[in-house]
Image (cartoon, rainbow, N blue to C red; front, top):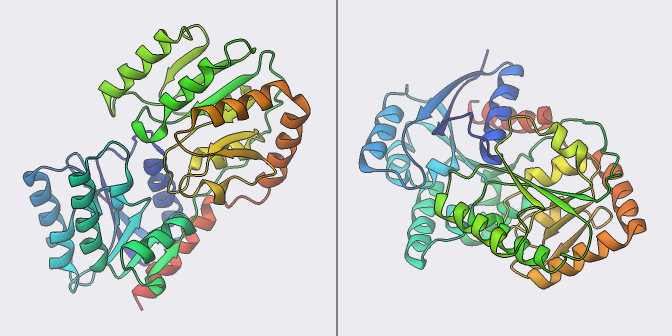
Amino acid sequence: MISALWFAVPGDLATLTGGYAYDRRLLAGLCARGLAVTHLALPGSYPQPSEQDLASADAMLAALPDGATVLIDGLAYGVLDASATRQRERLRLIALCHHPLALESGLSDAQATHLAASERAALAAARAVVVTSPHTAALLRRHYDVAPERIVVALPGTDPRPFAPCAGNPPLLLTVATLTRRKAHDVLITALAQLRELPWQARWVGGDRFDPAWSKALRDQVAAAGLGERITFVGERDDLATEYQQADLFVLPSRFEGYGMVFSEALAAGLPLVGTTAGALPEVIPDTAGILVPPDDSAALAQALSHLLTTPALRRRLQQGARTAAAQLPRWDDTAARVAALVETLQR
């Protein structure tokens, strides 16, 4: 018997972020494994929906047949606590948590407290919770009272790709991330301003429409630092293969990551990495392939980049470490297999 699943995702599934990329690949992978998956497109702007958006999502869930299995992306699920509580007995609810909503950067204390409370209540109504890293699983156990037996870790997959030659002159530093506060481009600008005497160029790939005020502030910061000729704001890209292939080093000083898919993609391309100790990144970045610094520490970031830029032997060693690690990365079919097994278990 073919298992039926409804996969509820807020907004445009084609949005170019790591979370939406995960959802797209998971949906495709589940279909490829024979599940009958129906995409439920939840309207509205999450995780700050209007009352109308909440009512619409509630009506969509209420219209599903009794006993339906529903996987709901955490960007919406964390604020659908009232709907989840109403439907917890009638539907088989599965939460997909990329990372807790309250850990997003730029929130006020009141906003973070509200999101933590709503997500805790919503998670209590789920029969299972899919997370993208062991780190997030630990967070949900420790701070959200989710029992370990209800959590399934489904790591993001990667696609095999040619290794980058890493032979640029000057070295090209690649950053792939939406221009939002959590990604800490501001820290990277401050660090790079300390390295203006060294040869390098930087390409920043990522959308600037998620927080227009922050995006403008970053461009102003680059201009004020006199780095406008060295940092290129690329914008969104559907296909990142060329970006990874042309890069010599990947750097992103995130303030938090529930996993950090771009780091595994950079590993798949054999790029040396510079990241932070925030969130799940120590689980993703092996010390044989990258350097980790504390979040929000521009001095430590500048030192790490300087060391790499001035020590070709270190870059080559980390490059080889990344190539070795690439062979151990999970594939997207592995991701889908974990979630498919969960769906089948819940439907027995």
